[in-house]
Length: 222
Image (cartoon, rainbow, N blue to C red; front, top):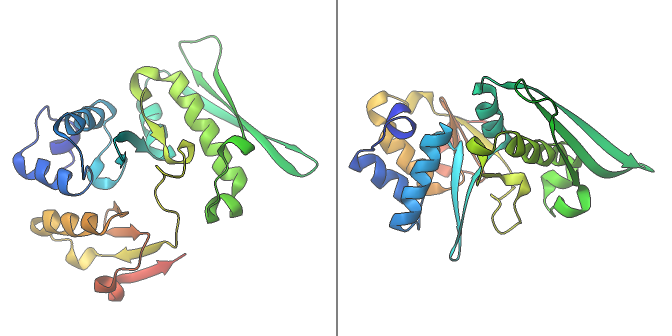
């Protein structure tokens, strides 16, 4: 399925809508689904590549992406002029991170300071790489302030409470190139999104759970 069908055209065909509703936007109402499609089009992020996520928790809905999605949007903007991130520590303890985003059309940067005790989660990745995770949060907040029209209403996974976050578990990488014939793409996408928590990058599938059907394709486990 070509990217342009989802994120650039003003309409999607029925097959694409069915696949999105069964996978990426599972549980969405008609209005929620329309809202999600509009976010996809306005940001240029592709839900089939897991660049943007629809997360539903009870009656609450949140549109999320990763920091790479924010950076992709910023780097496409003609006024983006770089970013600087600093970490603040006291007595060897991580306290905060500060990110400044520069735009060519503004005299002053958009700056965000975030505190570890407000964002840290009880997950393996936050425990093993706290500085990297806090920097991601600082970047996200600063980028959203610098580009409110493009990023308003979208949050990164690292910013969100635990109940909205994607599960941080063991990660498995599968090379599915031998299954990636173009005519099989819709079927393959449907299978992986039914499994949940999958990211597809070219011929590599990254999952949070081991998929028995793909044992022969497993190339990395972390």
